Length: 78
Image 1 (cartoon, rainbow, N blue to C red):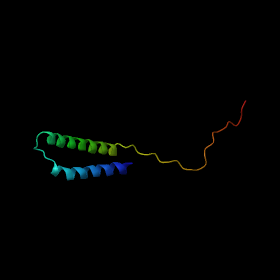
Image 2 (tube, rainbow, N blue to C red):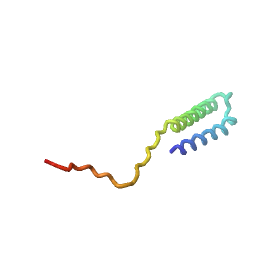
Image 3 (cartoon, rainbow, N blue to C red):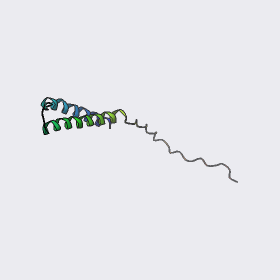
Image 4 (spheres, rainbow, N blue to C red):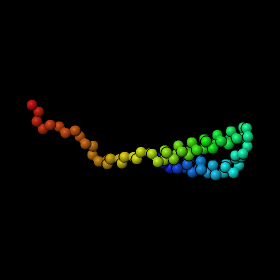
């Protein structure tokens, strides 16, 4: 599961790396709204993947596949 979060984080970083030189930060109107919203959503994606990567709970180790434990029976019953 962590590999998927790391892969998504790297791909989103790659997309930002290629997109930033093509975005116009000094435009007006719809182009400015698009630039700011695209960067905001990119930050959401990066923050979500980074928090999922950092806060994923550790898996418990599987128990040995030995003999199944039978419930103990009382030796004497009254």
